[in-house]
Image 1 (cartoon, each protein chain N blue to C red):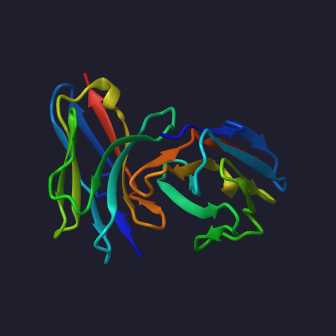
Image 2 (cartoon, rainbow over the protein chains, first blue to last red):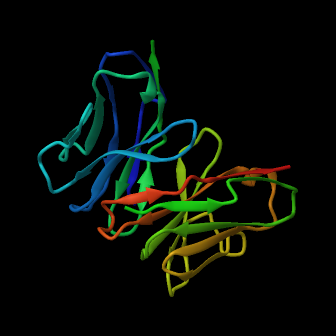
Image 3 (cartoon, each protein chain N blue to C red):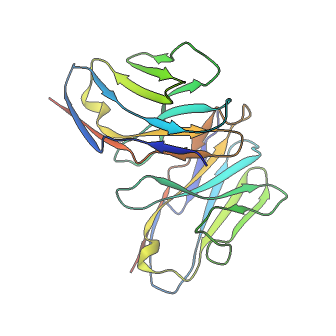
Amino acid sequence: AQTVTQSQPEMSVQEAETVTLSCTYDTSESNYYLFWYKQPPSRQMILVIRQEAYKQQNATENRFSVNFQKAAKSFSLKISDSQLGDTAMYFCAFSNNNDMRFGAGTRLTVKP
Amino acid sequence: SAVISQKPSRDICQRGTSLTIQCQVDSQVTMMFWYRQQPGQSLTLIATANQGSEATYESGFVIDKFPISRPNLTFSTLTVSNMSPEDSSIYLCSVWADRGPDTQYFGPGTRLTVL
């Protein structure tokens, strides 16, 4: 079974600074997808960024980028120029052809 | 993309009663999922609901407690039966868009409180 581990329950960062959220996963599959979702207090799950396992190039979406290390099964999220609106729970997720599994989440607080 | 709505958005229920949550999608989708998110916790998959077949439940979840219907490609319901305070959670409907597992969308969730 696939497992997703986020070892940082809480993190904080100063506005405009950079922060990195960690995620590791375990799978025996070679073809899968990895995601970072943001969940603000409104509880709506918002897709931040996705990575296909077969792509070596790290995904980037504006201020958000990932460091995907397939051999190490690591998938960290870097948020640059942090903004107050980035304050939320962040979930790392793994998806294959069956379903999606989530890590425990990291609560990120951006401080003014 | 897929836009998902859920009804009700929240409810407060008495112990021993049942609540049915509706999930409506603005496009036809094959794969639908129901998740539970207990307070301060991550999302846990309850079951996968494909149209035309019985729902597949994850370990720890049973059909008698969480019956699911999937009558067509745009709609599903999840019933939380014989509720107890431990069922107080957010219940989220989720779907794969046409591209499959690389694109998963979530509904806004239903916040359930059981007294």
